[in-house]
Length: 73
Length: 140
Image 1 (cartoon, rainbow over the protein chains, first blue to last red):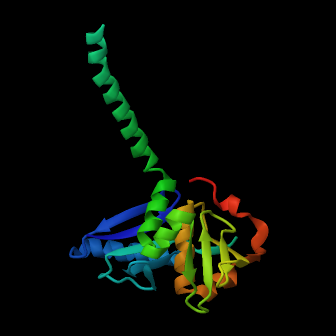
Image 2 (tube, chains in turn cyan, blue):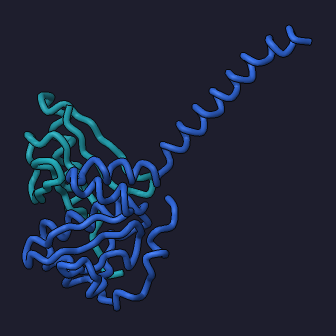
Image 3 (cartoon, one colour):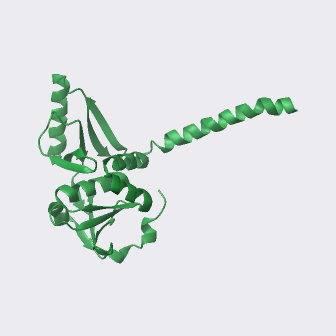
């Protein structure tokens, strides 16, 4: 199972999906597009503490984290 | 009398265990706790050790190689530090919305490690002495 983790006021919301299921994969890709379109940044871990950003949906990524648009505080 | 105490003790122990379980379950499922758990999962072992000991961790900016110290908090919690660990500049940038400290800190880490210039471009600077170390050392 792959997971999309979306930061929110509850801490985070997790969406799990089976990358081998075409329908679930399409929903995950749609979610990716909607979130990044709304200004969320997507990133995944490449090693312990190492992170890479992604700008397009990658079905091979096991865990994608989304955080909202950054603003000056 | 003794029998009554004997019979009651296990019930009391069970009740105590149940209360402890309830406290732990709900204590570990608050937004704050979830945010801290997510953060620690995504930190490097060195950052995790630093965070557990000091309630802050250091990250290296991907563009400049500068070191930033991210303190536990949701605003004005990022300091650029020199080789001696002395804060030289404060940078304030946060994810929009009302996120918990762990989430804010993780977003700041990812931003500085993957797109430092963009993060600093939108950040507001502040003098590093705005908050004392005591401010950042408040309990979770």
